[in-house]
Length: 333
Image (cartoon, helix red, strand yellow):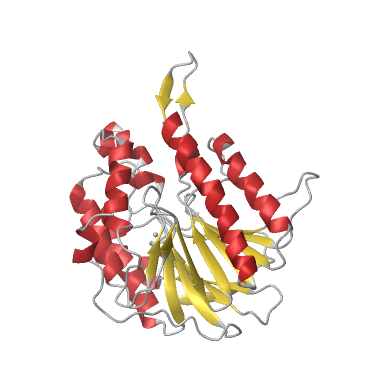
């Protein structure tokens, strides 16, 4: 394992049915929110395992996180498989079993590969809404996280149980179902024919997400949190279609400008570790209290951790953890 300390100022760098009960660990609870001023560390992962190689490498990532006694809990920011793999039941079962092997709590937020993209022929041609219902039954059925130790989670509603909130130390955490693939909004070909997405689903979930952001920031203010962490899957600044992330970005900007603490956005989707400040105001000025960390994934089966120190004015610093056994055999150019 190789570790490099990254700062939040760096501009860029190379989580209602019964299935989950079979996998949720039977260990102790991890609800001691601790001293609000105490420093702690969390692990951030997502977009894994991808394919057979990823299923070989992923356990090594879990082993490293489990061996690191500094880690309080892990956040998985979506995509339990690659987009071309079939969205069949055994794959979801495998992910739930893997989540249950984490020593400390693991909180999961959905990604596009496990529901929005399941209508692809290579993925089995499933109805994305049916797959989202499966994700909710399996991964959002209880008010607790995965892991051998668990965290208490507040779920938004019976309709949107995958949207979660919890508090640890002096930080408020918020998980949202904002997937890649342009947020499951309708996509059209050159003739105007709809080829992907679902307007009704997108519209209702988007409204719920915006409401959850409002409520999350209000909860953070009421708790006098030093920071708030927003977790979602989509890279809202990717080169793929991003028009239907505009509401989320606008709401996040509005709420962050008025928030007295630090704001951390955690996302996956693009598979490259990155720490930056991508959010601007109406005058295109960088909103300096907002930092984003984008996690490893796909062919890069590694992990990143965030050190949370309420005594640090910036609150967050980041460490990349490169799993040596998951590195490829490099070829000199």
